Image (cartoon, rainbow, N blue to C red; front, side, top):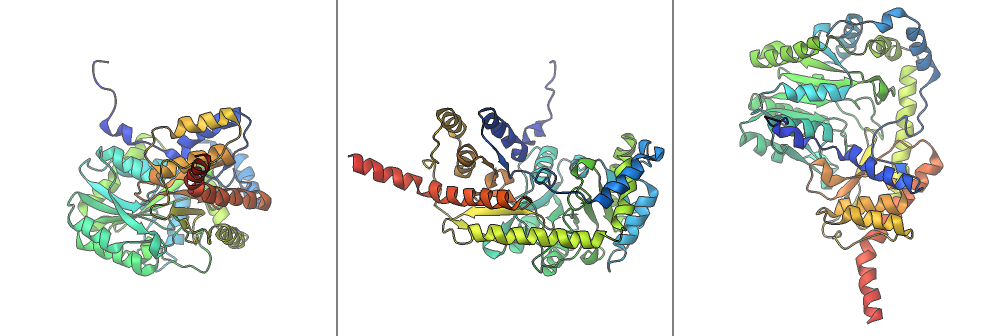
Length: 445
């Protein structure tokens, strides 16, 4: 090619959550059964979509209007419905023109960073959700900017760390909050959200809150929506139906713009996002039409209650497997459906392994770990090869901590118990493997 075809930031678009699937597929070809804990797809983990939701979708499928283009910003009736739902909460009031639909939240996140000035940065939490960190890094062609979530303080954000990074990095124009959080499962207390808004106000920033899991909170925890704590600070909320309905295949998410007119620069940015969607004509029509019917259905709130109670029960089961393991730090999940397990400092090294009887599987695992620098990836690859459990290394979430992320989605109780028993056994075996090898070598000598 006469010119380099790639944008400099394209190499930042790494997504280990999906990349590890390629390794799991290699094992499947060898006859290995895989227990998928790498991605938050409720349908993959045996979730049943209620019949009443299927009936709503079936009725819409029979309506010709579901097959056409819709308004470029999203179906007006649906946006009016969502604006009214938002305005039921005390805080920033919006109208339907403040809502913009996308083909899934991944599309929205990509656009969010794509149309920022490449020298403008959005600082987000670490451990980071890969879609946010990858797109933010790609747009700037630099490593993602992050503030720390603290595993020794319930995974709450380190607000001093955030404040200092914002203060001494004038390129930062926005703060990202993921509440409830992916990958840690932490639910932000109201006081923490208010402090983040104060920091944004002091330094003239906007706030982005990814609230895709906003209705998946349990174990007695509470939080606030961004609109309830934002005051007069510009902000954007990201929402969708992929997790709570659940309907990830709908590819239907939206942005809500708050205090848009309070800052001319921010208003222009929102307009650019709208214009980008107009160029694409529109987003998926059928799921947008379904939203008011699903959210206003008399069974919806009871359905959410039962769903959250079920996830809470699984969080307790998983806690029973992990809470007494000395090699890890464990915080119970209180929102979304993920848990991030962190290894204690110094327990991992690049000599540890899990025993694998099958020669071909062992050779494959050894080829994966050969030359890698992150020992949590070493654990994850051995766990996959030895036990068939597919998780994601924490170091791939823009974190200096070593560990891995799991989900709380498995609805088959026998599979759930088996999967996490295997992980717990693997942690103990892996962390002791180098000591066992040393003992065996001494005995042989």
